[in-house]
Image (cartoon, rainbow over all chains, first blue to last red; front, side):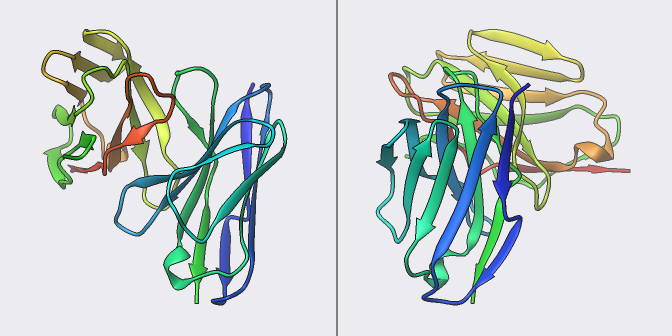
Length: 111
Length: 111
């Protein structure tokens, strides 16, 4: 069966520090991968998606970047965090148009 | 106009009643529709998918789709306190592969 791993679960980082969040998928090949952010009391905002290794599409201009170094690995990064980067970060995967499966999420607080 | 619209609620129903959650979407070419449940502090969980007009039932859940009216709904029969959560409607617009979410409806099932 397919599983998605996302870590860490919570993170508190100072403004200006770097960020690296990792997501890995097991049990499927060539999935579409996604990074979403959910700010407090708000909806899910798509940040990046990837249809293959090295292929990244950015949805929203921001202080973040994404990379896909391996088929089932998706990384979200920032060189310098801003207060506005705080939120609940969710990785998801899909194959075809059959809905997304989300990881457990990382709650990031920038202080 | 938002791509996917939901009433934010909260929608309060007594235990054992039918909860009715509604969603409208703007892209007439959309073909894939999903309902997610999100408990506070947790990641969204896919509970229903529907692709053609009509009703689709799964246990206590029924999804209804009306493409002519660009409307999708979720009915929860015999509502339980454990159903209390935020329900997210999601749509894949026509010609796309990215899930677009509504902001969610908060459901409270009261004893």
